[in-house]
Image 1 (cartoon, helix red, strand yellow):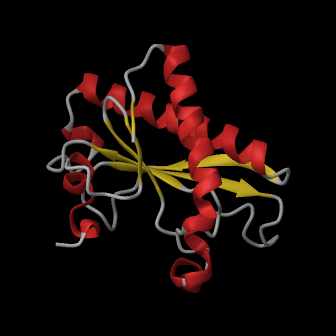
Image 2 (spheres, one colour):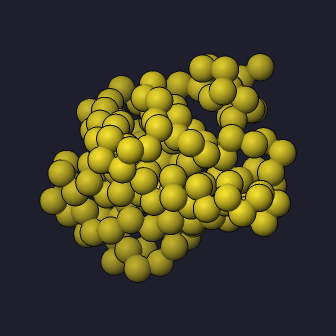
Image 3 (cartoon, rainbow, N blue to C red):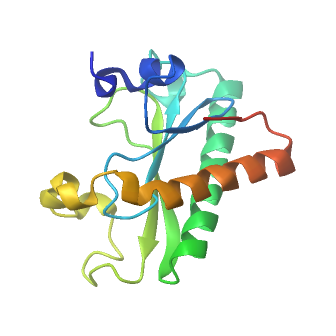
Length: 164
């Protein structure tokens, strides 16, 4: 089975190559596509939870705290590596993948003017399929930086993080 068919299970088994770190509520992963460099996702640990509302409150709150942790790490890493970094957008949708997860999208000044102020989901479908922006070795420095930021934030906040 390809790891993409079971992203959470493959992360739990150590088979998902996109995993940056295991957080208390989920797995921080770098996105398969990197047309906005630094795009990451927090995958909830429970593959049966289809929505935040299905999780006990304490688990929901922990998930949202881990989203904040990952978003802060992405922001710090992207700000340090690209002077055109603007901000981070966070999306928790679940329309295509029926498991709890949150998208962390860095946004940049170099984005097309008609897109920079709109949701990333309005990017042309070719952006999502372009081999030139697919996750690859060229993203290793940014991946490392995000992982280092996660580790640093976890130490500061005394949060348990397992760095892959």
